[in-house]
Image (cartoon, rainbow, N blue to C red; front, side):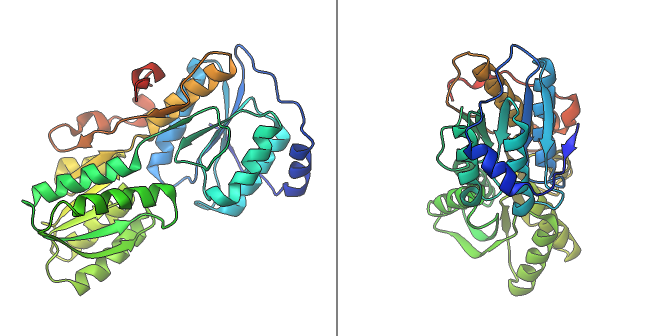
Length: 326
C-alpha cells in the first residue's frame, strides 16, 4: 500500500481545478483511485484501507492512499485534496476531516470532471457518485439501549462523545440521547468529548471516576475511547462497570471476548471500503449503481464475537449487491 504524503499545492491546484481540465477517461480496468482516510492510528481506517485495496485488486484498479501524517490534520487533508486536482485520478473515494472547509475544493474537483464517491461519513452536499456508509444515529441508539437493558433499566451512566461538530460524533450522540429518553430510571451523570481517542478516553474517565462515586455504565462513541475508559476503570478497581462502544476493531472485540467491554455496535470500515470501491468503479465503467448504500451494523457480544477477530487482511469483501436494499 502506498501512502501519499504531499506538499502544499494550493495555488497551483486550485488554478488547475478551476480551469475545468477534462477528466481522466474511465477505463475497463487499470483505473487509478485516490482513497482518503483520516489518520494512520485508528484501526477503523486500517480496515477501510484494507477493504479498498482488496476490492481494487479484484477489479484490476490501482490505489493511491491519502492519509495525513498528523491524525485528522485539516491542513494536510486540504493539501492532499488539492494534489488530486493535479494528478487527476479516475476516481476519488473521499471522507471529510472538516466537511465545511473541504467542501468547496471537492465541488471544484467534481465540476472539473473528476468523479468523487463520499464514503464512511458524510461530506456535505455535492454531486457525488454515491454515499456508502452506516447509520450513526441508529448505531448510537441501539448500543445505548443494549446497555440500558443490561442494567435492568436503571443506574448511572456517563457518555464519552466523539468530536463535537463532526457528523459521526453528533449523530451517535443524538442516538444515545434518544435512547436515554426511553429510560426514565437511567441517570446521565456526565457527557464529555473524548474525540474518538484512547488517551483522551482514559483521561476523561479518570476525571469522571474522581467526580462520581457510583457509575454503572459507560457509552463511548468509538472503540478507542472505550478501551481507554476501560483501562481507567480497571486501574481504579472499578472493572465491573459495563462499557459499550461503536466500531468493532479487533482489539476491542478481544476486550468483549475477555469481558473488558460489554458490547460494540459494528461500524465496519472494511465493508465500507469494499463496497465503496466496487460501486465507484462500476459507476465510472458505465454501470447503473445505487446513489446511497447504508450498511447495517450488528451488535457484537461475547456470544457472537468470533468473526470480528479475523484480521482485516484475511477477510473477504462482501458484494455491493448484498446491501442493495439498504
